[in-house]
Length: 328
Image (cartoon, rainbow, N blue to C red; front, side):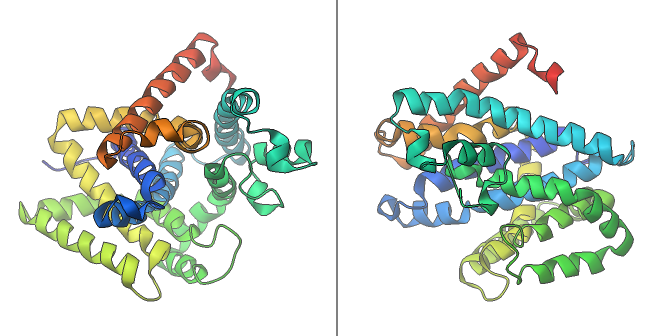
C-alpha cells in the first residue's frame, strides 16, 4: 500500500511515538541500574526532540502551502495557541506544587520570584538567569518559540536555495548559538520535506523494494543509532535529524498496515503536547516513589503513560466545557 499523502493523522501518530520516547528517555536515562538495554535505549530515545522539531518544521510548512504566509496572522495564531496551552498547564500544576508538594516558587527563583516566573511563562527563560526554572522539561518552550519566530525566514530560504540552505543549517550545528544551533537543521529539513513531499517520496521508494524495505529500514536504523552513540563529528544529537526521519518512517509503515496501531498512536499523539508539558511533574517532582514502585521498566513506563493519558483526557474535557479553543 503506497501512502499518497503524509497527512495530519500520520504526523499525530509520529508525535505519539515521540511522546512515548520522551517518557522512556526521562524515566531511565539516569538509571543504569535498570540494565544495559533499558539504559542504552533511554539514551537513544532523546531523539524524541529531533522528531518533534522535524515534524514542527514539516507541519508549519504544510499549513502555509495553500493559504500562503501572512506574518501577522501566522504569529498571532501559532504563538497564541502555543502560549495558551502552556499557561493552562502551568496554572494547573504550579499551584499544586506550591500548595501541596512543597515546591515553592522562591525555592526555584530565589528572591526574584515574579521576574523569574514571568520569564518562564514568556518561554524565554533558557536565555536568562532562570535556566530550567520550575519544570526542567519546559526548556523546549524556549526552543520552539525561537523556531516559530524564524519559520517565515527558514521557509523562504529553503524554498529559494533548497539543499544549499540545508547545508548551511548543517554547518550551523558546529557553532555555539545558544540553545538553537542543534535544532535549526532538523527544523529546516522538516520544512524541506514538506515543500518537496519528501516523506511520500521516501515511502514510495521503500514500497518499491517490497518486503525488503523492512531490512533496509532496519539496517539504516541500526547504523544511524550506533553512529549517534559512537560516531565522530555528526554524532549525538547532530545525527538526530536522520534518526528521527527513520523512526517516523517506521511509525508510518506500522500505522498504514495496522488500523489498531494507527488509532493508538494517533490517540497518544493528540495528547502529546499536554503530556510533554506536565509529565515531569508526575514522575519526577510529585510522585516519583509511586511511579518507580512498579519496579519493571515496561510497567513503570506503562503506568506513567496511562496516568498521563487519563490526566490529559481530563484536561481536554475541561477545556471543552469552558470553551478554551474559542479563546485561541
